[in-house]
Length: 303
Image 1 (cartoon, one colour):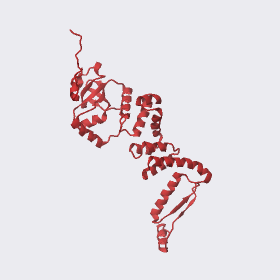
Image 2 (tube, one colour):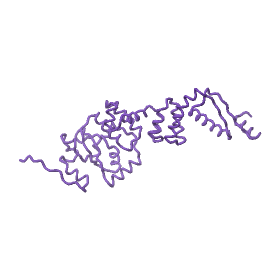
Image 3 (cartoon, rainbow, N blue to C red):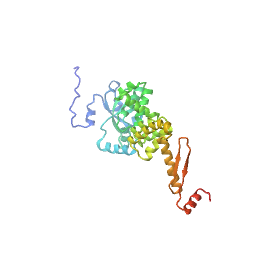
Image 4 (cartoon, rainbow, N blue to C red):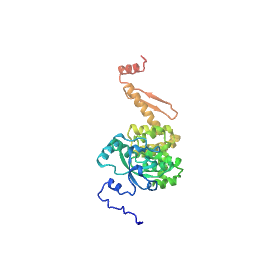
């Protein structure tokens, strides 16, 4: 009997993924996958045999984008196979590719092409996190949370983490610092109300109350990153000025301005509100006539 191995290297140019699968040395039915070949093979696996990844770092999936992917799969099929690990015969667990997995279900597929790999729980987590970090549509907070999990659950140091994800230590640290922001601001990053640039500027504000005040102003007035950076810089410089000339810091001025606007709206006239650093001040409500004065007094319930 000849020891020569069969030649499976057939030309694949212009052929579909199905044809490539037919050339695999192992049978591509999921139940026939052999342990010694599961590290490198691509196989058609039943969707019913695949469990979702318990280490999936992504929590939110855009329903519209998922439906669009499903429509594309109906027409083009699966371009990039998912990656799974084999738990037992006819039983697999997703490592990466959950959007493709979920969209394939929506598209009505019964099988999906998959790379089958061996991996323990820690390797599963690391592969899933790194695969997701490398995706362009991951928001800054999800990246930060993934970095934190890699450090905490995979026992990586920041230098090692940077090597694994192809980022320098400074970049990794900038993402991790986002997790020190108040939860309200973190949620805004997740929901894309503010960008990574906005968030990085807010990190440099020491007071949580002032962080939230600048954040609210940025959202309400749709400030650019540069405007937020300028506001934070003015706040920092204002701390020094405050001691010298008793001026209010920019955040305090903003709070006074918002109160003044509410008073003006309530009384139906321009209102002047002044306050010093010791929270002492005055409110002026101008009136144009006796009738106007009576109107204001009625609002104050004085007459």
